[in-house]
Structures are given as C-alpha cells and as structure tokens.
Length: 425
Image 1: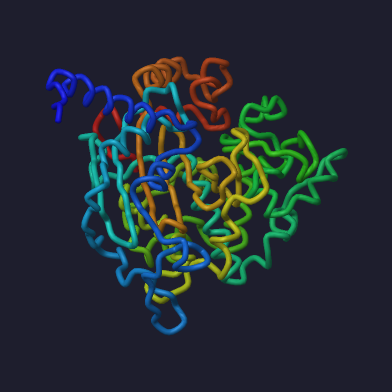
Image 2: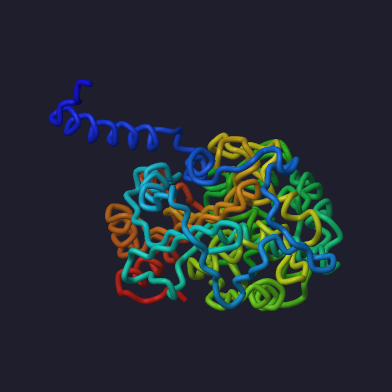
C-alpha cells in the first residue's frame, strides 16, 4: 500500500484547518454563536420530547426544576464536553457580532449548559469576574422582565393597558393617537414615538427634563401606534420606565432589587438615574457577567427560581420574538431579539458594544458576552465630551453608535470609568 507523502500532509492538514475555520466564521452575521452550537456542540435526540429538549428534568411540587442546581449563590461547574472548542466559539462570536466594525474587545465570555457552568473567561483586567460591566441596552430586557413581574403582582392589569391610564400627561392637539398607545406597543418598539435617529426627536433633550418619562411621552408622534417598528433608547423606553415606577408605587430600582435581583442572587447590579432620580429605561444598568448569566437562566427556566415563580406564567414565552421584525430584519419580541434571523427558538438581550445574553431553551444553553468600544469609538467619545456635546446627533456617531437617543455624558462616564480602571457604578 502506497504511503501518503509526509510533505503532502504538512500542507494538507493546515489548509484543512484554515478552510474549516473559514467555514465556521462565514455564516451570516445574524446567526451568532448558537448556530455553531446547533451543529457541533450540543447533539440531541429529536425523538426524546416533542419540543426536542432532552429529558433532564425532575419536579419539586408544582415548580419545575430542570437541572437540580440553582446559581443563586455559586455556579455549579459542569464537565466540558470533549468536542467543545471554547476559544473557537468565542472567536466566531466576536467575528459575527452585531456591532461589526467597532473594533470592540471581549471582556467576558461565559457558557451555561443544562444549569451548569461549563466555560468562563474574563480577558480584560479592568472588567474582571467581580467587576460590574455597563449593559447599555440589555437594560431594556430587564425592563421587560419588570413589566411581567408588575403584571404578576397585580400592579398592571395586562400589556393591553393604555399608557395614559398610568401617566399624567397632556395630549396636544393633533396627537390624539397617543391615547391608543398600549404597554405592549412600548415593549415591542411600535408605539409611534420617535426612535433613535428619527428627525421628530430633534430638539427634545428629554434627559434634561425634571420628569423625563412625561416629557418623552409628550414628544410628537412620528406615526400611529402599531404601524412601524422604530428602535428607541429614549422616548419609548423612558415612558415605560416612568409607567412602571408609577404602577409599582416606589423607586424602580428598589422594586427590581426586591422582586428580581435579590431572589436570583444578583447583588452586583447598579442602575443609573437622571438628575431627578428617575431610572433610565433604555440603558443605565451595570452588572457582572455572572449576574447576566443568572438573568438568562431565569428565562431558560420559564421564570422559575428555586421553586418560586419570579416571572408570571407564560411571560418568558410571550417575550420571545414572534412575527415582528426589528431594524436588522430579525425577529423582535418584548424587548428581546431573535439571534438567528426570524427563528424564535434562540433569542437575546442585546446591548451596544457587544453585550449579549443569548438564551436557547431548545438547547438548554445560555451564552453571555461583554465587550467594550474599540479605540476609534473611545477616542470619539472622549473628544466629543471635551467639546461638551450633549447628545448623539452627528452623522459620524450615527454610523458608529446606532444609539442616538443616549446622552453623550453617560457614554463619556462609562469611557472614563473604563480608562481609569474603576467599576461603573
């Protein structure tokens, strides 16, 4: 039998590895790391259950305990499957992120499978395992969870409630359609209020107002409710935050600590406020990567936590993207995005500069990734802050940030905390 020349193997093996890596990284950028997991990491038997989830569950009373472990205090480490290549997965995740071109860095990358932590990596000396990281728009998904909790508490009747039933606002002439805006419109970014970059929001520095929620809701509509998706970090989200504060009758962060963060053991969370003490709705939360993983695990368990229902029945399922498309053409739910086009089986809480909590119930997996802006973006923020620009209206920043509704001084504070090595409180 003729032997294969050794020189041929020296060439063929590296070329095969490079070609394989290129294929893995060449998937459409929307199909992020979990697409790789589907194919290579977590095999399953589709005949085990109709929902394709391998049967790993036991039950304690009425509360399903899927995995028998809860990370309230500490995570239980699981054995990494021999076929899992975490560094390759991390690389592909970075190459296919949403905010491509920003040159952002990976600060943390964590993977939970069947309730157990099987991979954890913290690359940045500033944002270590115990250092809270700015979440940016992941805050919106937390706001969604608090909406569900308030409904479960009876503070809100349903997502069909009208916003004007909770906020003391003035409806200007020609703006009667505001009376039809529901909580669900705010949760799905279809309220008709101006979104980030919409010309209708020009001239309204809502973050400087004493009552930012009321000011946001009174900004003129750009369309009728339910007609069009328009992503917003400002008017819609601040209106929802104000509504929740009014409905629960206390500071929103205090309510969140009592009803959400404390039960899950999320003790690293902080939440920025405006000058009047109102919590920001579209951004402002910081937490550690481990607390991000706990939040994702709550949704993976359909809102249950150690025998207690934190989210009302059906809320996690209702939050999943179904039928609505965001500005990227991906599915959108209650402030959660589909991460694989319109496939609702995998969805994420997403924040600018690469903050992700990816949830895959059909794979029993949660992936967390945190990141920071690259040097170009950081330099722009620093320069513009020195020029005392108050908000993001320049075309250059529209291209770089895609989040024009956020006050520049908030981004600058995050940048300064990063460069000084301080946690962002």
